[in-house]
Length: 259
Image (cartoon, rainbow, N blue to C red):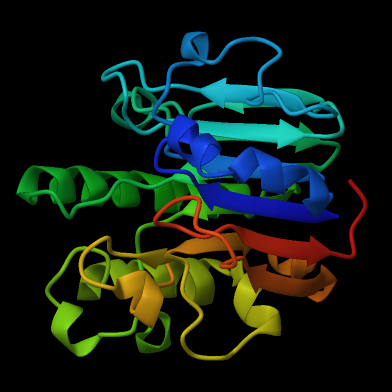
C-alpha cells in the first residue's frame, strides 16, 4: 500500500505547477492533501481535481473561503468517510477528513500554524489540547490509524536546519515539541518516516524567503503518524523534490499492508 501526503498550499496552484501530471505515475492507493484552499464547487466535475481511478473527498473551510481545507483520494471506495473531530473551531476550517477501510483509518490532517500571530498560536494550542486526548482514546478503540499531513511542528533538532535560531518560533516551541514527545513516547504512536530513515536534512517544508528550497534550509513538519502495530509494516519512505509543486514536498510511504 502506498500513501502520499501533500500540503498543496492551494490545490489549484499545485495543479498549475504540475502536481496532477506527476500523480498518476506514483501508483498511490491513497492521497492525503492539505491546505486545498479552494471550495469544492470551484473544482469542476471531471477535471484534474478528481483523478481517474480515485474516489475523491474534499473537506472545505466553512468559516473562511480560500483557507485551509483537506482532501482524500482513494482507489478503493472507503467504507465510511468521517468529516471533522466534533470541535467547531477545528472543523469549521476543514482540518480533518478520515476514510475508513475495514479496521484501518487513513486521516488527512492539517494542524493550525501559529506563525501569523499570537491569536493563531493560541488557536493552535487549543487544537493540541483537544486533539491529544482524542488520539489517546483512539489508541484504545481497536482500529489501526495512519494520520497523514502537515502537523506544523518540527519534532527534534534533526528535523529542522536552523534549530538554534528557531527555538522561540511557532513550530519549534518547547511545548509543541513536548506535545510530540507525549504523542509518540507517551501515547505510543509512531513516526513512520523515522522507522526507515534516521538521516538528517530530511525536510518537507521550506520558507519562500531567500533560497531556502535551493539550499535545503527546511523543516520536517509533514508526517505519517501511525498506530504502533503498523510500525513493522513500513517498507520505505521518500520525499519528492525533483519538482516543486508547493512550499511543501510530497511525502511518500510504502506499507506492507493491503488496503
